[in-house]
Image (cartoon, rainbow, N blue to C red; front, side, top):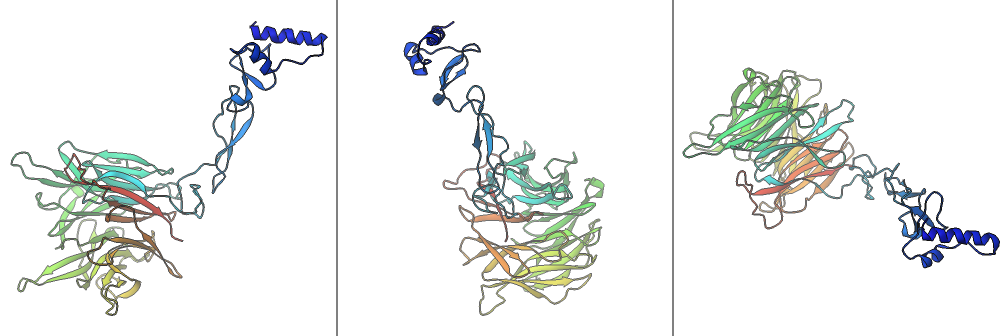
Length: 507
């Protein structure tokens, strides 16, 4: 028995015959400054607890053993829980609390930041993205009921291609990283149908000695997590191996994948089965002469065995050298056979054709495009127009929406099965030499809703728009890093940019 315990016992016996009180902690501490022991036979006096055979004052403990204290926030969708104080005076885990989750477009404050349907900041995808090559992003429906809708991204980082998905907590989960010791990869592209994803990218093999640079376009099949579903990666011919493609686009239907490849001088297409059977590969088929910076867009067609493509091309008159600019639309079969191209319009002031199939019509589709300078009173005002097309002709164009600034590029978002666009992303400038700005526009039944998207940092270099089935919108963009921005990728020697994903909602 310890000295302090003996003192406590003797004091208690003495109190049985005299009118005295039980010693307090202060009395015992005064008699034994080094502490006093306790066990199952000898309890601690009031105001202390037996912790590891020593009596400890209550005020010296983090909590009172056996009690519960509240924990967590009571804000937004978050609700507090409780923590149990164990026998050692240590708080356990917070239980029964509703904690913050990544924000959703559902009219609720999911991340408990005090605002509904808002995000505090863009989500960083990578701070080491290759300059001059856009990142790609698509919405993947992993379950028919929409319970596992996922944002899948494909980016070029340090000469590799990296597939990632945005987790429910707002972090990135890497699905697959593709690299080669003697090549660098860039220009990623994605297309999805349900949980089946087609991914393409450009491989660059740099010369050894007197060897030429070789450019190869690759195609792979992934699932919605970014994991390969086919061990094979198929190369896609695009013409001369010495000509560098500067744009790749994809479309996918029930059985095939369409690959569109643009070089500085022309554009071609290739079709291949989703099994990546090399024997099913058809092409390259020349689509047209393409001016630098021109654009094309492709989607599965109304028929099961074809695709629809809208594109910009140029024609140079061999007699006088005069160049005209055309917007065209064409059907492409699974075997890579082109239908008769339909002229949508020809003007240097129209651009960004975007094709939308007509639901329930195997041969009908609409082509939306931007027309600049249509209003002589406001020459910098832009018009979004569309024309309804059939097997061989298109109707007269109709106005769809206007924008008060000069649009440089337009992207549209169309919900599955919808007959018209739900959203547009305009890249525009106040003046031709000003930095580009971004505006997202939602086309509502009653009125348009606009959101000026001004990402922090230097001017935006490239961007893409994704609308999820749950109505969350994602803007994917890359920009210059803060000075100094002379960081170079060790893989390819290019300067790097920062890639971000900015989530937002419409009303």
